Picture 1 (cartoon, rainbow, N blue to C red):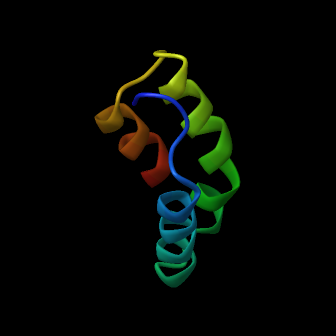
Picture 2 (tube, rainbow, N blue to C red; picture 1 turned 120 degrees about the horizontal axis):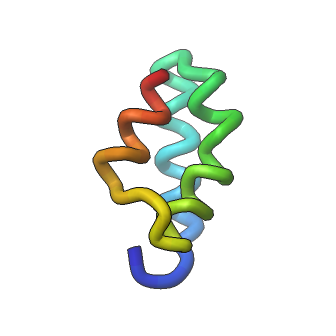
Length: 52
């Protein structure tokens, strides 16, 4: 991911997680986005983490 994710996209992800009733994923979203931005994980790994 190049730079910070656009806030509208992050807001959309938050709404999706709420509607999918994934409160744990919602709690770790910000930390996961930071790890993507720092190059520690890629998008697929992030999705896997949000699912757990």
